[in-house]
Image (cartoon, rainbow, N blue to C red; front, side):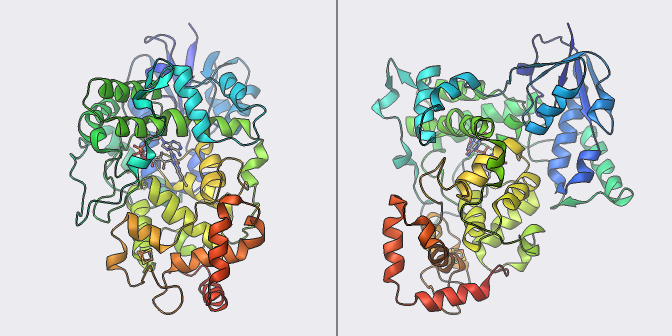
Length: 485
Ligand SMILES: Cc1cc2nc3c(=O)[nH]c(=O)nc-3n(C[C@H](O)[C@H](O)[C@H](O)COP(=O)(O)OP(=O)(O)OC[C@H]3O[C@@H](n4cnc5c(N)ncnc54)[C@H](O)[C@@H]3O)c2cc1C
Ligand code: SF4
C-alpha cells in the first residue's frame, strides 16, 4: 500500500484507507515566513502535526518546500485549497484521490447547484438532509419542520453574565506543546518570523483522543442548550454553548459525519431537544459543507469580488488586534477575544467584526486574509463564502439575500455589551452616537443606489430616506472613518 501524504488539515483516521497505512507528514517553516499568522494558530497546527507523527507508521519531514519533502510515490486526498491542489498536480508520483472530510460529494453538490439562479444554504441543507437521511422521518423532516431557527434566536438570559452550562474538558499540554512553544519563541527571536495575537495555553484539541473527548462532552452537556442562545453574546462568556469543535473538524481530527451522527443519535435518544440538534446539524451538514462546495463551485476570481466597491485599507489598530485602542465595548471585547484566543463564535465574527468592516468599507479580500490568518480554524476554503459572500456581501447576493448589516439595536438585543459602553445604541448623531448605529445608516446611505434593487432592503432604505439628520450623520461618520471607535 502506498504511503498516504496527509496535509495538516487531514489528520484523522477517515483520511486513510486502512488504520495501518503508512503516513507522510510535511512541516514547513516557510509557510510562517510568508504571512503573519496568529501565534496560537501556528501552535495548534505544529502541535497537531507532531502529535500525529507519534502515531503508527508516520514519517514527519521538515522541509522548505513540499517538492523537497515528497520523494517517494504517495497518494493524497484532494487538498483544501486551489494552490495546494495545483501543487499536488505538478508533483510526480503523487496520486490524488477525491476529497474527504466533508459530507456531500462534489458531484451531488454540482447536480443540486447547476441551473439555479441563486444558491441558498437553506435549500442545499434540505437537499443534504434528504440525501443523507439526517433527522428525517421517512420523507418528512423530524418534527415536521426543516428549520427551527425561530426557536434559536433568543437574546442572552436576562441578568446572566454567563450561560449555565458545563465548561468543556480542559486541554492538558504535554512535552510536544512545550517543544512547539520554545521553537516558535526561537523563530520569533532568531529568525525574525512574526506572529499576530498573544500566546496562551492551548485551548483546542490536537489529537483524535482530545477531539473525541470534546465531542462526547459537548453532546452530553452542552448540545442540549446549544439552540436557544446560539446567536447571543455575553461579555463574560465567550464560548456560550457553542461546540468549539471547528478547529478539530478543520484539522481533520473529527469526521463531520460522526459529529452529525452523535447529535442526531442524542436527539433520537431523547437527551437533546430537536431545536438544539437541528440547529447544530444545520451548521455542519448545511453551512460547513455549503461554504466548502462554493469555494470550488464559484470561479477563482470570486475571492476578489467587490460589488460594493469597498476600497478601504484595514486600519492598523484592527490589523494588529489592538483591542485596547477601541472604546466601543462590543468591538473591543471581540477583538481582544481574537487577540487572546484566535477564536470567537459566529455572531461576533459576523455581526461585530464583519459588520463593522462592511460599514466602514474595508476591502473584502483584505478581510478574508485577516480572518484566515487570525483565527485558529481559518482556512482558505472557509473564507470565500463566509467572508466575501456572507459577511461582506461583496458578491452582490450570489449566496445570501441581503447584507448582514446591523446597528446597535441588534447588538443591544443580542448581547450585554451596550450597558457598559461609553456609546448609546439608540443615538445616531453626537458624542454618544453608537458607531454601529451611525455606521449602519451611513453604510446604507453610501450604498443606496447599489442596494435599491434588493427587495429585502426596501424597508431599511425607506427608513434611511425618512431620517431627518441624514446629512449630519453622514458627515459625522465620514469624519470618524476607520479610526478606532
Ligand atoms: C466572517 C466569518 C468568518 C468565519 N471563519 C471561519 C473559519 O475560519 N473557520 C471555520 O471553521 N468557520 C468559520 N466561520 C463559521 C463559524 O463562525 C465557525 O465555524 C464557528 O464560530 C466555530 O465555532 P464552533 O465550533 O463553536 O461552532 P458551532 O456554533 O458549535 O457550530 C458547529 C460547527 O459548524 C460548522 N460551521 C458553522 N457555521 C459554519 C460556517 N458558516 N462555515 C463553516 N463551518 C461552519 C463548524 O465546523 C462548527 O464547528 C466564519 C463565519 C463568519 C461569519
Ligand atoms: S453602544 Fe454600540 S458600540 Fe457600544 S457596545 Fe453597544 S453596539 Fe457596541
